[in-house]
Length: 117
Image (tube, rainbow, N blue to C red):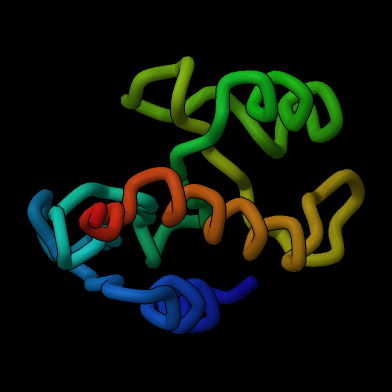
């Protein structure tokens, strides 16, 4: 997954916005309805990584399946966040389809809930 593809996918999710609260080098993707973060990345970093929110049980299984490629969230709550090294087709790298699924799930965890009633 390229930096451009990552941005395009994140912004394709409902109410997603890109912000830069930590400076121009760090893209932070939030939902506009409540301002909660669902993904963070430094688009110019080598290798490209993305940190996202993840269910703790899923996080543990993913780290076991992709050791070194999926790690506890960098500078984030290690229980609820993971960091993924985006490498495309490399040995042991998570496929783009999985990364997109995890981004959708992260977005679903933080998006505003519709009002009841």
